[in-house]
Amino acid sequence: PGAFAADFTRRFASSCAGMSPEDVKQGRPMSDCTSAIDQLCKLLQDLQSDGVTSLQTDSTPRPKAVADLQAWLRQSVERCIFKRVGPPMWRLYEQRSRAEDEKFAEKVSSLSVLSDADLLEALEVRKVFRSSHVEAANSQGTNTAETEASTSEASAGFGAFHMHACEDFSGGPYER
Image 1 (cartoon, rainbow, N blue to C red):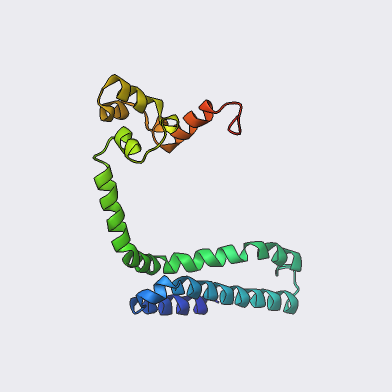
Image 2: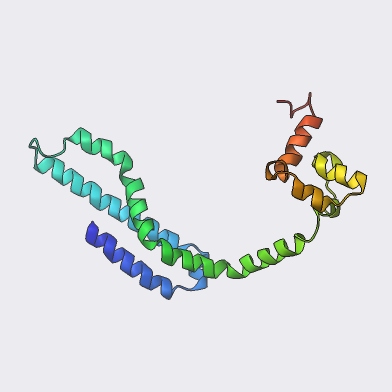
């Protein structure tokens, strides 16, 4: 099993270097890993079965002990394989997603110049779903960016909108 795992790791790392974007898109790296994990689990199960039936002394595991270990076998093999092939696999998916990641970063950057209130207004989010600190700043004519900066992160964002909505709809399906 150790030789199989080492051989797979070497083959996987070298195949990643020449893998086409289409192969990555179709999930070939993950299917290769899953296949290797299945094979390695089978090798280990066969080895355990052979060891239990051929040697029954006090120093060898009993069938119940081996059965108890079965529950942990797949998880252990997955950890072993993904620990070894994680970096090359990460680089593959990172290269594949680079353009999308850059586009997302641009959107985040362009939206960061807007205040929460302006963004919610542009998205036509109903006032009932908006945070009370943003609405208070708007009604007082204060700079919402300053008001938002002074509030804790725990009260900002979607969670605050959701909590506010739950409070406004008491007695309905949102009742706690």
